[in-house]
Structures are given as C-alpha cells and as structure tokens.
Length: 507
Image (spheres, rainbow, N blue to C red):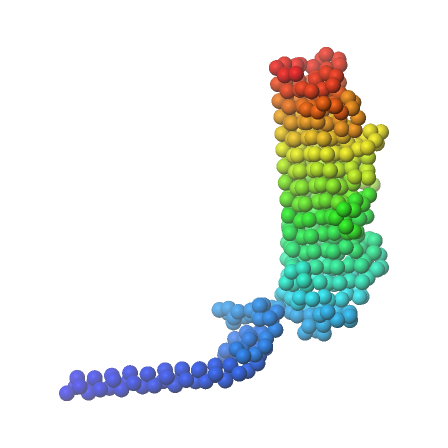
C-alpha cells in the first residue's frame, strides 16, 4: 500500500514537471512567433544582458549592423561599435561627413576604445580641424579601430590646403588600427593620407588603398611596433609612398607602391619606401623590416638614411626613374649618422634609370658599416650617358661590405663597381653588361684594397657590345681566386699593378 501511494505521488510529480516545461515552451514559442513579425529591434534584453543590432526574421535589417552587432559574452557585454550614420553621416551624398565620422571616433575614444565602422560607399571630407602644428580631417585616438568593408568604403577628401592631412593619429597613442578602406584625395603638396607625427606604439595599417592626391601615402615619426601590410599606395610623385623617421620595430610588408598618375608614368622623385633618422630627435631608427613589397613606376625604390639593424628582404622593384636601393649616410645638422647592419637579401630590381641617366641598381655610400648584399637579382640598369655615373648594378663605397650570390645582367655600364676596402665579392653571377657602349665597361671593377674576389662567374655571351674586361682589379693586395671570366673583348681578368693573389681562375 505504501509503495503504491509513493508511486502515485511520483507519477503526479512527473506530470507536474512536464506541464511546467510545456507551459514555458509555449511561452517561448509564442514570443518567437510574435517576434517573427517584428521588423527589427536595435536592442534585445535578457535580464541584465543586452545585445545590439539584432535582426528578427521577417524584417529588413541593416547588414552593416548585423555583421558587427556583437555577441553577448559570459560577462554580458557586447562589442563596442560606433557608426558615423548615428551622428549624421550620409553615404554617397555631397555633404561634408567629417564631423559625423569624427563624432563616432570621439565616442569610441570617450568609451576607452572601440570600432568605428564605415559602410560601403563614399564619405565626403570637406573640412579639417587643428591638431596643434598641423591640420587634419580625422583624428584617431588610442584603442580605436577605424575600419570598413574593403576598398568600396571610400573617404573622399577635396581639401587642397598644403599641410592638411587626411587622417592623423594621437600623439604618443597606443593600439590604433586602420583597416579595409580607401582614401581618395585631391589634396595638395605636403599632405599625407595617414600621419603619426609624434609617435604611436602598437599601430596596424592593413588593406588601405591611398588613391592619388596626397604627397605622402603614410608618414610615421617616432613610432614603434608598427605593421603596414597589404596596402595599395599611390604617392603624389614628389614625396614617398611611406616615410618612416626615427622609428623602431616597423614592418612594411606586402604593399604596392606606384605613382599617382598612371602605371607607365615615371616621376623624377619620390621613393616607394624611405626610412631615415633626423638627428634633431632623440630616437634613432633601428630594427625595422621591409619585406615582400612591390614598387614600380615611381621616382625611386627603397632608401635607408641612418638606419641600423634593418633587413630589406624579397622586394620587387621595377621601371623606376631613380636608384633601386639606396643606403645613404645621413648628414644632418648635428652629426653624421651611419647605416649599420643593413641586410639587403633576395630582392629583384629590374629596369632602373628611366629618364634619369645617373640611376643605379643599388648604391651604398661611404662610411656605412656591416652591410650585406646577398642573393639579389638585378637586370636592365639603364643609363644613356656614361658621364652621369649611372647604369651600374651595385655601386659600393662602404668598407667591409659583403656582396655575394647576386645575379646581375644587362647593366648598361658595370655589373659591380666596388670602391671600398676590405670587401668580399663572392659567388656572384654577372652576364652581358656594358650595354651602352661596345667594348667599354666591366663585369666587376674593384678599386678597393684588401678585397676578396672569389668564385664569381662573369660572362659575356654576345657577339658584339661586349664587356671590355670581365674582372678588373686596380686595387692592391686583393685575392682573386676560382673565378670564371670569359667573353670579354679585351682581357678577362686584369690586375694592373700585379700586387694581387690570383689562383685557379678559369679564363
């Protein structure tokens, strides 16, 4: 009897729980059915937790908000997104959107950070504000990400005042990100698309297109821990695609740099990439990386002024007016700053010297130290007038430079010209240089003393327009060993003073 009573109570309890469960389920289903016919709700609350920008089936939602609405996490907080449209911006109209975008940025700044999200279409920037010593349209502070949905998100500026930049970054700011939009500018000379004038730490600039107009694409000073990647930058012809001063830990990787007119235009000046040290500032440039960039149809390739421990790896440079690669001693107002420990490895330079007869494939200026030039390819280094000093594949003037494993062909004057002491010129392959004049120039010319010239292959395979001398060593006390030198119109290896050690060369 007792067991029967207990069994009946157990069955009743289970039916009661089932009834409660069905009641809750119907309630939730009813809510979902009711919500189904709502068009949209900007906020949805679950107790104390809130999600923003939630789409309800059957409505027409803003896809921008939906994509970045944010998911409620375990702490009940949503991602902080800010929209220029909230502050009055209208995409694709003709009105000035600057203040609305800046208001969204300021709102993120006031919250301690967040993401300012740009919609597809064109925003107009027709005005600017003072940032102290300069003007800019937009100013981004620490912990803020300004991002869009790719190059279809356009910031169109019609400013023409010199020194008025498009986007500036907070002085000594931290953790700033610019991603996935385009800057299209009608700005004038001495203007940058993006500028950090007094230092930013932890900066990301990724997938930004800077389309014409600005003189500099990106200007960075006193910055550290920076990554500039996958950008498409057209500079204004007179300035540089990216200019980095007194900075360290800067990585410039996988970007494209070219002139702002057409891809067949060759401006007289303006480098794709330039790193430098200004000796009036305390910080020195060091420990940077320039890798995998494509530079073409522009004034010059890559230039280092007073930089140290920086690597230039795997870049492609072609069809430019000036030098492909330059390591220049900075001679500032206070002292002379050397480039130290620069590594130039695995780059391809093809076609320098268009409209400029003084251009070289690479030039390393005197007094720089510990320079490595290895495994690069240089082809078609043009000069139409030898009197201007151009047309040389590698022109080295710094003592102790190592030049090894490079391939150089079709340099209009010399393949390698070395004017420095204690250098190593090993295992290079040089072919068919001296293009400008028949029977005139050399594959390797070394006027420096105490140099090692070992294992090089210097050949001329042409029937005419040949090199005069394959390996020419007027310097003293050099070692010339195990080289292959063949095809010169005059002599394959020439040691004018007879002071050098020569052995096992094949002529």
